[in-house]
Length: 127
Figure 1 (spheres, rainbow, N blue to C red):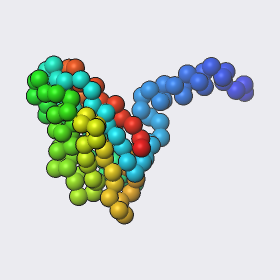
Figure 2: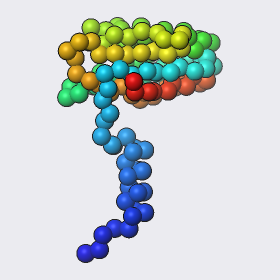
Figure 3: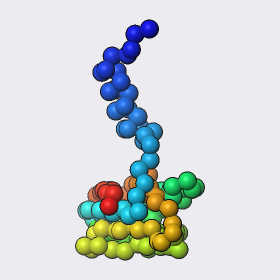
């Protein structure tokens, strides 16, 4: 039996990465970078998953005409309300949200599942 061509393997790997089926990346700290103000009302849905644990979805309601700094504060507040005892959340540079594990907690993954707010972009960076 012949091995599949390299291009096919590369295409499959690219597809797996794009679909989110790749192995999760855990970290002890994540940065969410908010940019742009809200041109519409909507929701941002985040998922925080501790290594070896169950995921928790956090839904953040954003009002129309909310500034990027206020979007960051809304995300921080929603995370604190939902998972605040396990993670420390804070604002950095006005528009970034830092999420850090508290001592003894496992590393975790933080992803943006959905964002229906027009004009708001949320980048995710492992720290």
